[in-house]
Image 1: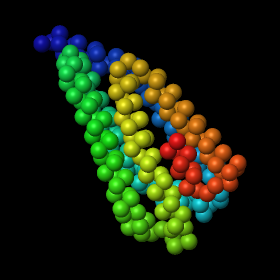
Image 2: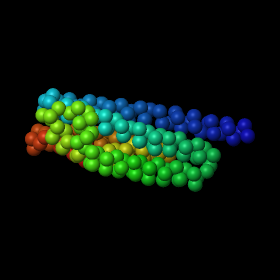
Image 3: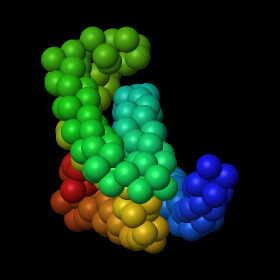
Length: 201
């Protein structure tokens, strides 16, 4: 029994050390790119349209509950099952996490689509930016299931022995987002809703 517990402890300790730095850099790159994104919008479109992004922020942060629940929670259960050599349970937790995050985020998107006016009124959206806020949120809602899927599957990819791959994927996605922001805003002179489209792309 002691040998079994020691093997499990050693396995989880090694996994923690293996995942720590790539996860740290992934989160840092995501936050830094988000700051750059906001700076670009602020400079090119001004503070009024930047406030549209801020109004949608609570909806974006709320999705964090979903991907932490299904990603980190599911991966911890999968790692425990892996340390006990229960491979069927590992596959079960992975499948449950992916199906769960897709189901919840699609329901979330449906709620935004049906109640977008109520959501914006709840956030006390000023009348002068109500329409562009609605256009922005209706575009951004397609970003939520994609982003949550990527983040949930990244937990499992890291736990499966590829700790750097999610970092590279998130970094590339955020750089592409910034590039499309610049293309849409400076080349095509599109509005704030197209920065949401850049996030979806």
